[in-house]
Image (cartoon, rainbow, N blue to C red; front, side, top):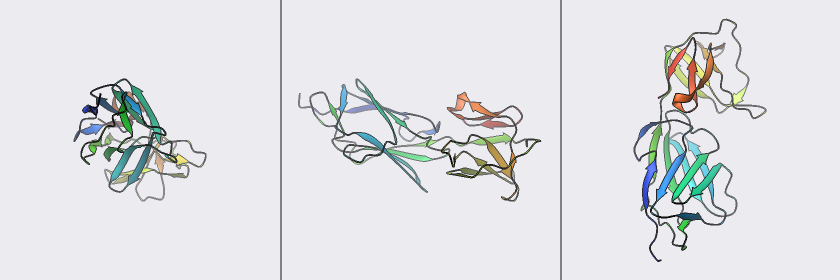
Length: 199
């Protein structure tokens, strides 16, 4: 067998919009696949979006989990990709191969590109108790109905914060009422009092 594998299908689809920030990337090849030694995920973020790169070799950071199930290759980033983020996925030459050792040669330099969903808030109801958000890094900001909205990030002990706070001036913050998980949006948000459309 000297025929290299062919990428038949991807999820999300190329050019698609509205994927959940927690989505896994699935690559379906024409035949069962195997990984090159030291294969791992490298995920970088910038103002222009996020780049998920499948590469082999020493020093590849553990930015996610790679699973190969026959012809399917599943890429599971360690952290959510963020809302309204342009994501590109690329595969280093020789990082994946079929069971005969024929390397996947790539898509001629064309990355898989898609965009995650926009977090849309339909209504926001302040928590009557109110609270200041704990200091954190990597937060997401939105401007909603004349107010700043803060969501996510990591606190000093490394935990991801799922609470939501709003502010009119960026100095005094109030917690939003009823924050909870939203399974329909793959880890987005919903509220009992406040509502959100994360699809």
